[in-house]
Image 1 (tube, rainbow, N blue to C red):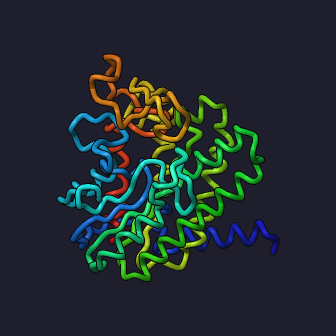
Image 2: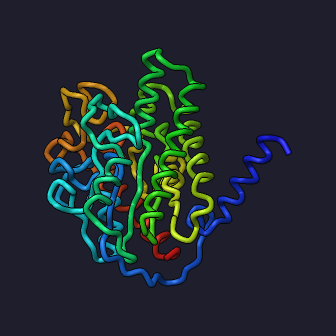
Length: 317
């Protein structure tokens, strides 16, 4: 068997695993899951307001996919900065430092898990969300753009980041987690940032390599881990020929909230949606847009993605 045949065989096995049922199709059985609490680790994609605002248009509604999932189970999540269990934060990488903004002080996703476990015992009804990879993809792409690494090295590093996220899932389960929701990056080639730098194909391939490495690393964790295919649902939302949400604009950021600093890690002087409110969208109807800034979504897309994730969790557990 060739290496590529072996890899395909492993991936088929991964798709068959109970951990990955949501990525491959699922049933309609009603969930018996009644979460005690949601505990969230990740980067800005899963940040529920660590610094007081979220990475979307901050309009006071349920504005992130994490909040939407929790609300569908009649729960709320508050950031760890206010005593809650939302540990995700902007620019956090999975295991490496500095973060996507060049800050060595930001807790990695791994350190977020360490922090939680040092002070808490996992309950059998807890739902842990382990998300990550967007910041790692940004860092690797920025290094490519700066000429400090090749595309081949970028792919190698991204694959390792996928395996690293899988390692965190394994750690959480070893620590007692019974329900771990695993969320990888969406295809950043579909983002305004990816389009703007002309790296759509590279970022699409890099995302796929990340996801493949992640899936293989958790293929034996089906009793407790659920990989939710966020890449596919976002592809559906952002495809030009898709009717999902019927959004008129799927390629531009609606917010005008420029951050003079490093912001979301894609460069200084870029739009940062954590600074965005309905008054900083230039009078545009932001419900018609997919993206709030160069990387992160408007509330309507967050809720759409959150509903999809909720259904997968409900069907699995």
